[in-house]
Image (cartoon, rainbow, N blue to C red; front, side):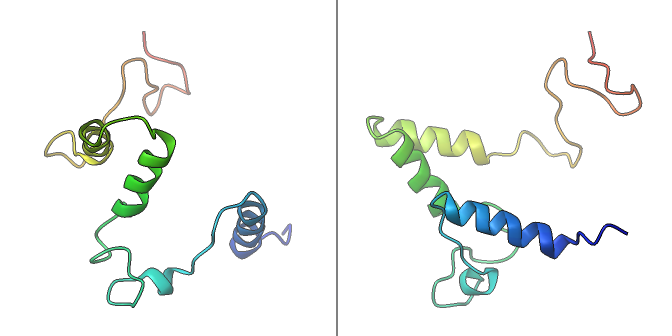
Length: 101
């Protein structure tokens, strides 16, 4: 065994992100029901306010309507299926990584 664990990788990634200027929060601090909760429940995958803030920060000249549209496009479901959507030309399982034509 190499001695590298998930915890080792996680700590290294957190240190790297912290050095790059990212703020690090523990999941328990932003969990539903906590003082600084960022989601209403654990089924909410996207931290909506963070995404909205990031969109506005990256696109300061866009009107609010365009930012709302971008948010909707990033968070909407494409249809009533649990199967992942594939972009045209995406690789399919079982074809050894050869792109579709």
